[in-house]
Length: 340
Image (cartoon, rainbow, N blue to C red):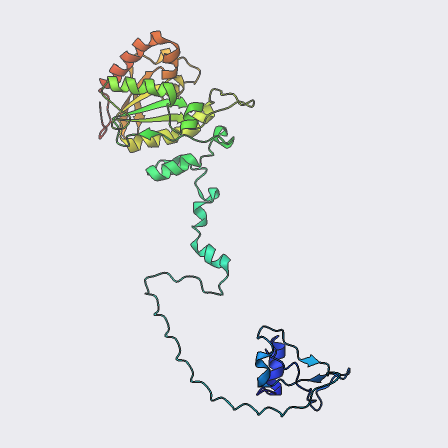
């Protein structure tokens, strides 16, 4: 039919396709075996009717015969078989990418696989992979990067296990002095640096008065990296266990900086490093230079009031100035240390 075999017709029907033109007024030509139960017959369209119906008309394979068909017209000649068209040359394949370029996901590759291939190592995002409970022996051999990770992920005492954010030290990593305060404060926790806010500004002014800065000469840190809180959320004094748990971090900071002089701020840091009970008043260790025994030898330790206390008691600033001068003039140093 119209140059199509029965197999072609069936194939087009399965594909949802049909003739694009049909003769409206041509007589129905019954094909043997092509009728249906209602008497419908298949109608063959002639080439002359191509203009009788637009190409966009919906295909209709079945049509009922006209009540009064017009005179029969001669059957159209079978269309000449068209010679097969020359096969278009195959498009050239794109050149293979250079071997040094990463191969992307294939078209049928699942998206999840291509995304996971770009994902970083799980350990970079897994807090459990960090050294959350480093021992003092492990801390004693850490470099700066390892020490920073250990402090950030620390769970050595109850203060950090309560979910507080540890505050690492800051300043010169090749320091002449290591300045150690007690516990982190709310201002430290917010700024992510020790001795933040007004106490930090006063400390910077005092260091400048003796020709030093945090950036070039001094490393500043808190003995207790987290902010201890009471059950009702108020700040509290740290316990002896919390101070002992954090002490290995300060000792490692002291070793890495190679500082020869330690300046403590307040009674917590001074009493901890000198092996005294934490509640002991600062007056018992002020006014003298102490020898702090370390793996590098004896280092000079000078105890001074915390800048926060100096802001509340201005009369003690004269004593603080004397302590600064004492630390600067300290002669107790360790071999290889950076003395004042």
